[in-house]
Image (cartoon, rainbow, N blue to C red; front, side, top):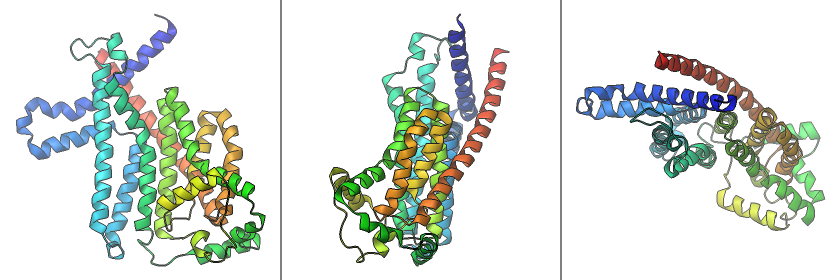
Length: 370
């Protein structure tokens, strides 16, 4: 057996042992008969297996849902429908656990021959079913981020009833001597507007491009590390937005602009996106900047060449958030900080999880061989 084949086999064997470990830990109760479990026992067994199938990204995502749900309970009097929000978050958490559970079960069935416990081409090849669940298991984080951001429209006044824009306006004026969004209007021109809207639009591509490259190359550990960086950075930003509600210059300076920003197709596209999905509030820290920074740090760690490709676009995007009147300079600085902190915390959590899983996999493989 060649070195490459041997390494591949070893990786597959470790993966099987790991999956078998958490499935057996959750399904060992089944040996006593499902009739003895009852609904509560069966639900507990399924939850245990689903939790074992979760990765560090799910820990961060479910942790955010737990913290935000606790805040909703504590400050329920400030919300119109707190029970509905708790129910919605519980449903999202349930969908995440169910997706992890189903994908793990399908992956196990596709990779492991339950009859002969032997490897074959059929075992290794991904079936259509596994590909379907594998795809959604890896790409649902983007939908989760979108859900959390849109939900902030209902949570922005969870803790404080008033807007805190005055503090950031004062900070911007202290830092720059002007109100940056208003001052930048003097440079408005259809061509520059279009470029800035393109730069603003580029935010949606950073994590998608990096994730697509890692997904295509099947570098699952790196892929989920990047998603974890993003999850931690976004979560920090979401919670800060609940504690410190900020509208953005778009609302605060309404009526002070000399005209709308006109341009070409990117301007029209951004205007449509903002019209359909604009959140009134949640401007500080900038989630655009935080998400871009998490992706930028992820590129630095996992695809260094892509970091240098992203860097000029991220810089332009940071400027564009102020130019297109969506953020204060303080929002941009806040996004830079939360995105960077998210990267370092997420990196630390990912390393700890990987070390724990490696130790467990080695123990289970050795136990299986004995």
